[in-house]
Length: 76
Image (cartoon, rainbow, N blue to C red):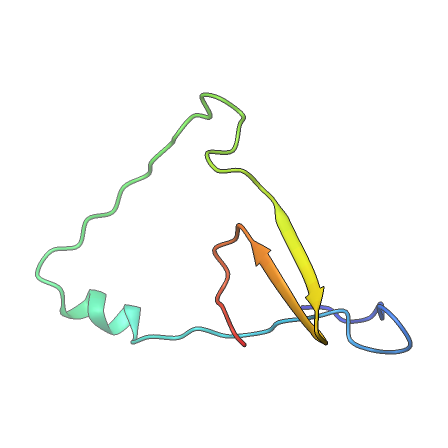
């Protein structure tokens, strides 16, 4: 990620950064009995999201609670 442009007062423009790693895919494929390679093409039938996009933020008693329809990890 590039952080050349600062958001406010020289603070980082990147809010959340996490690298997820699990296992060694190359090693797992080399040990597999069967490896299937294929190319899938899925056409876009209807250009509409299957779930709504929205966000609700509530600031109360010195705390900010954000409800968001996202698949991102939750951290507190």
